[in-house]
Length: 380
Ligand SMILES: *Cc1c(COP(=O)(O)O)cnc(C)c1O
Image (cartoon, rainbow, N blue to C red):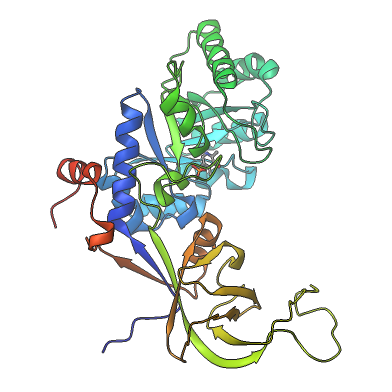
């Protein structure tokens, strides 16, 4: 038998492609284009390809490193830098991004100077603060800001964007979205600007987008987690007809013994400066697997069997195997959340493996899947 590498992340490209195709279709029905956000998977080229196969034509990342990777791979999509860049990053942004999101005049001025140097025009999306308190120009300052940007020789304003539910947890309500559209319309009128891209938010906006009767000026939405994990992010629910089980994390049992449930001996803080409480309940099936905090955000893992993660050190996850008799060499599978996927994809110690849609009975493609499979997915 050929041994599969462990620890590994198993990536189901077909399910991710399905999620992207369904979301694209739902958003298009409202006149909104989907920008696929791949920062959570380090712009993994196979995942990027799955999004392209689903018909996604705009991709967004948060690091210039990933822009460079996508540009060099000649990915056929508009490349957007999501995170407002630092001045030190400006040369790479102008070189590799088709569009960058911005909120600071000093940075935009540096982008203009650099674009002149590189003989280009650089496109930007100006970010507007709507209350979540991360990036964005305050609405009262926006007209003066736009006016100043318009005087720069090598900058083109490709659009206006906003962001919700990332830092302050502020939700994109009907009222907030109406306010955003009215800000956008005012700018359009005042400066006779086209604003081809009006980017209304991220996966947290999906509920609003799918339910609203009036999407206002919004014609773009930036979707990461909803494509990758099939989830709506304000309440964490699975979006109907999407696959939540797109990633699995598999680690290998390296020790399996009966041990007491509580540490014994005088106790201080553990190796991470923590004092952990233990519940005494006799002897347990005490299991160690070959991955730890250096590889994965352990609190973001849910075991697929009824076992319990007790904690982790840098290279071990400690598990209560409950009723399950594990042996050394067994594999244990976990479902990772977004934060865990992010860490697994970033870790050089985790093998990235790609699996095909299995089509087994319990995950039989639902109707929507088969429709989109005919329409969007390549024949296998
Ligand atoms: C991360 C990010 C997104 C994508 O967020 P999801 O919740 O994964 O959809 C969109 N826009 C900006 C500015 C981001 O930083």
